[in-house]
Image 1 (tube, rainbow, N blue to C red):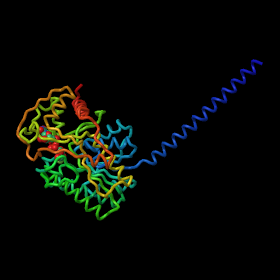
Image 2 (image 1 turned 180 degrees about the horizontal axis):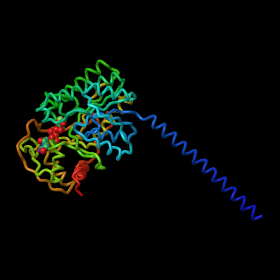
Image 3 (image 1 turned 90 degrees about the vertical axis):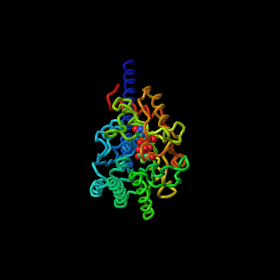
Image 4 (image 1 turned 120 degrees about the vertical axis):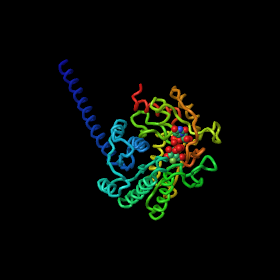
Length: 382
Ligand code: UFG
């Protein structure tokens, strides 16, 4: 009798295990199917200049939000290792093509193999204000041809949406602060700034003639910081022209002393005011813009948004915040004004906040700490 009871219990256990195994196999198949479905639904985005500072951070955020990213970059101001590091952060490797967008043949040949791209984020451009004064033709050639080729590619390959990388430089020195998207566009103070204004006008004429196409131009204020992983960040070649890389390189001992360009401006401590925006916040503004176009929420087929925090900081306030955030004392001196600098600008970002549903959220101290951690990693500092 006992023997039959044991046999029965073993039988019941076997049946139970069989059902568990059956359920797990079914679950596995279900997961594979849904994952494939997910892969099938991934939207493909072309990111030009995707190995650069803003492009690489935007690529990371796009991948993490389920997009498939195709990068084109001519690597003139960036390093191919950035692709490896994007993969380390996201566990996904973006497709990469070494392409100069200012060369129409290169761009079209590449896109011939990627006909399922739905949107473009166009970063690729030359961006050093000082260099643009010395080499204006380089800037007009790269930045104007780049946009024309991208727009022609949109038409040729039927890519309907584009986010364009513009700049608050289009406002010059505004008479009223903070600046809104309706503040007057002022004559550019550099060929670089002029290319951004001309680019906006070219896009305006293009969408007027081709109403099926959509564009959002994001006017960035001063992008700073680095990915919290310290795997990607800002990599200026040679002596940095911008404030944050100069600060972090001085803190790391690579530069002896930071020169603060002028303390006789009409600001609380005499140094110029800017609106410093975290790079991850800025990257996310692009995703909000892409979503707006994908969801057909645009009110016009070309829209402009100020992408800033809404807070203006003087150079000295920024230095103090950096010292507080990192505990590092910075060696700096006041020198004369830098030619072409504007006195003060900061954003009214309320239109982006309400319409894009986007807001800058990263605290400034965190941004500066991220920038410092990135610098320490680059310079092998513990
Ligand atoms: N600054 C210094 N010392 C430095 C570098 C900068 O004091 O070594 C000061 C500048 O005078 C300015 C502030 O730090 O007051 C910010 O200067 P950045 O060079 O970092 O940035 P800009 O505001 O001059 O320029 C930035 C972008 C441009 C863009 C412009 C729009 O670099 O691409 O904002 O206003 F066009």
